[in-house]
Amino acid sequence: MIVPIHLENQTAVKYNVVIEKLPKLTFNRKVAIVTNTTVSAFHLKRLKSHIECAELYVVTIEDGEEFKTLATVESILNELFEYKLDRKSLLIALGGGVIGDMTGFTASLYQRGIGFVQVPTTLLSQVDASVGGKTGVNNKYGKNLIGAFYQPEAVYIDTEFLKTLPKREFAAGIAEIVKMAVMFDKDYFDFLMDADFSQNSVLEKVIERSVELKAEVVNLDEKESGIRAVLNYGHTFGHVVENETNYKTYLHGEAVAIGIMMANALSVELGIMSEEEFKRVEAFLVKHNLPVSYEIEDVSRFYDKFFLDKKSANNKIKFILANGIGKHVVRDDIDVAVLKKILKSFTKKGE
Image: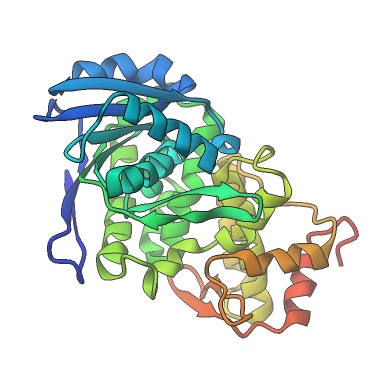
């Protein structure tokens, strides 16, 4: 299965998302694989056996969201200079969303830009993070606030990599899958409700549909000036949750699941989502062992952190909300009192 990426406003930018067994990868140039200590132990040997190139190097970094920083990017860059990579060289990201984001960002910086390829090894990165060219790192102010839109040359998705994935990591990817369904495709959501993710044929179908939906959006709006912002459903709230917990308590997909519940609570309050639909999404997340609650300690502090979100502008916070299941609406006119009411419902005292 091949899903093409062809950016509408950039005729020269074309690449494929290939969903199949990892093929033989041949490059007439220097190649550096960027991975982490966990993934390399499981998958590096296999990837290396599939690569033919002029020279092959490996850059291994520590595993974890807390290492998604400019300091780590600089350490990768330093190794690439030591290996004397040139402007025709290629990076391969072997890992999850953190590795993919940092490898792409590093590629955009090295000698003003070299090529890179994504080989995602987590469900979250296969259905979302590896597709579309978003790259970047975190800092103390928030998630992915430093980065660039930089498209890969190709994405190779092989479900074989998921066999070593911990259950918690697998569940985190499911949060990004349901995000796509709730925003764009009610029939897909209905399918997911009964889907058996342990069946590889079902899993491949789910990955394929998720990538198709994301590709449609990215092809129309590479740099998130319009519809691509809808892919941040659950993220405006979820990024604050991650920031408040120093990126150590929740996996990204888990924070997104919490963010989805907060966004849906706001949708119900605004009358654009029914209680029944709210409960269906909640039941799906609970079924897949994803968190659906979070205890906000300070509502005002949580609220203030919304303004660090990349989607906020002119002192207005842009919220991506479910307009029922399968449709979406973007709002930047939410009354502060209404928003704080929702946030208060996620405090210890609640309502």
